[in-house]
Each structure stands twice: as structure tokens, then as C-alpha cells.
Image 1 (cartoon, rainbow, N blue to C red):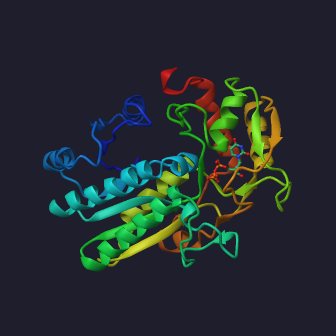
Image 2 (cartoon, helix red, strand yellow):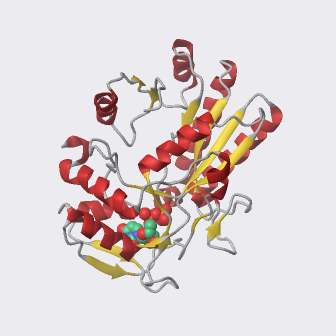
Length: 316
Ligand code: UDP
């Protein structure tokens, strides 16, 4: 607990109010909630008229790479317009501290798999383009008005759950990401994992990513809020551990944590996937005084607690 009073605005297109109730249970604090779409400027105006904000953390984005390829307009509309409306309303109310959820996806294909903030952004799909475009908008905004303080946090692969097992990931439909898929196989909701390629040039042929426990990720946001940069500064930080794990390493760690078998089948590579990338987190380590504290084993133990206690997610 960091002592903040939290107000949440969400259109619930990919979530429900149940996690908010559970956060209230965990913290003993009320969470004020507005069921609005950030693109609805009058509705957002109303929120800012009623509340008194020190800062905003902007998580409101669509994030499925495959959907962004089939529905680019929907992705550009949601992710860009929500940000523009939010910044416009924040400026009107003189709330000028913003922490934005960006993604390692902005790096795309680079000469080295160890991504560092100084690399030029080169995303390879519409989802990644939305994040890179938003970063550009936010950088330009800081240039135009030096009273803004904006931080973009480039998430690597968030996994795990709150250690209580009360809050965790509950994707709509078939999970796109590895970790929720593995959790659903372990709990018996899906028969087997499909491993997308075992012929990459990596330790065991499967894709390698930098997995980060969601609690470490959350603490990165607090560190960003509490870091006091120069006014008018726009900054980007990688939030990752600095080392990668393969698909098979994740599966083995989850097997150990859950005591369950994870049957799998190897299929061809997924279009658009890279073999390997991971964070250089040294900038966040140094300037935000933040680094990951939890391991892959911790994330699997907490993920299993969540999934086994809530086999049908928040509908359980
Ligand atoms: N992956 C997999 N099967 C799945 C989902 C993902 O083998 O059902 C692999 C994917 O090819 C990548 C890694 O797991 O190497 C992480 O994929 P995820 O979609 O979780 O995150 P991404 O790195 O693509 O954002």
C-alpha cells in the first residue's frame, strides 16, 4: 500500500467491477469507479470536475496484436483518441502528471535482443504502432508545454497475480498470451498448450521473453509517480528483469509451482513473433530506484494461487 486514494475510470470492454471489489477487500479502502469510455470527453470532464487528481496512470488500451492486425481502425481509434481526450481534459484541469502504459513492442526488430531506451522505435504491427504514436504525442506535448511531467513505461511480459490469489488475469475468450494459456491448461480448462515454434535460434528452440511479475510492474508505476523529474520532461523506462526465459522454461516453472502436468503440442511459428528479446532495465534501476524483486517461480506460484482459486476467473 502506497497511501494513494484511487479513482478508476474504465469502459469495462475487457474487464468487470469484480476486481475493484476485491481491491477494496484487500486494501480496506473504497475505490471510486466511473464506468465511462475515455473517448467520451463530456463524461471524462465530469470525472475531473468531481475529483481532485495529483496524477493519472493511463492503462486504457487494447493490446492484442492479432486483433490489431484485423481491426487496425478500432485500435487506432481506441488507443490514440483515449489518450488525446485524456490529455486535453487533464490540461483543462491543470493535472499534468501522467504515467503511460507503453510496451516493449515499440522496439520491434533491432540489431540486438537487449532493448535499451535509446534505440529508435520500430514497431511491426498496428498495436505497436499505436504505442509508438502515443509516445510521440506525449513527447511533443511535453515539448509544447513544460509544465507537463510524462513518463512512458515500456512493459516487457507481465505475468503472475496478486499473492493473495484474489486478483489476477481473466482474459475474454481464448487467451492470446502464453501465461494465461498455461494457467488454463494447468487448471483443466484447456486440453493442451500450443507452442508456437521450437526452431528458433534460442536455448531450446522456443521464443524467449523477459517475464515480469505484475506486482513488480505495479511498483514500477509508483516509482514513476514519485520520481521528480525536471518539469517539461518526457521520459521512457523499460520495466523488465533484464533476462529472458523460453516457453519451455515457463512451462517447467509452472509445472513445478502447480504440481500439474502441462500437455503441449508444437505448432509452426506465430506470424510476427521474434525469437528473443529482453529488457536492459538499468535506466529504471538507476533513475527510478526500481528493480524487479520477484522471480519466475514467484509469478508461477501466485498465478497458480489465482487460477486454482478462481478457475473461471472473476465469474468463479
Ligand atoms: N506462445 C506460445 N503459445 C501460446 C502463446 C504464446 O508458444 O499460446 C509463445 C510466443 O510465441 C512467444 C512467447 O510465448 O515466444 C510469449 O508470447 P506472448 O503472446 O505471451 O507475449 P508476446 O511476447 O508475444 O507479447
